[in-house]
Length: 64
Image (cartoon, rainbow, N blue to C red; front, side, top):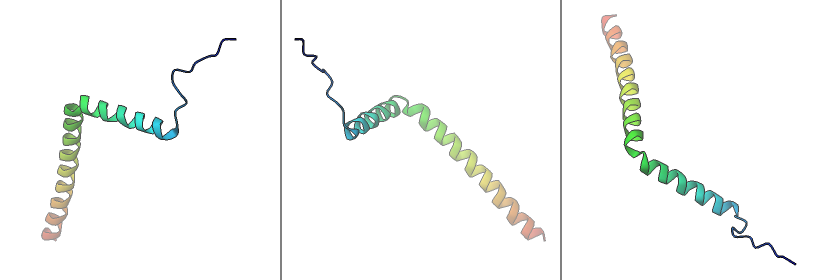
């Protein structure tokens, strides 16, 4: 009788989560430069928009 040996024992949810986290971390470290550039662009765009809105509001208040 042939007994099937399982090379990969059944992974618990905790281990699966750890593997997923490790993969995400690895991906982030590999593409850190691109992610940083994207975040920087998003940040500058949103900050610029908020700044424009804020300055516009203050200008209209001063004009009135």
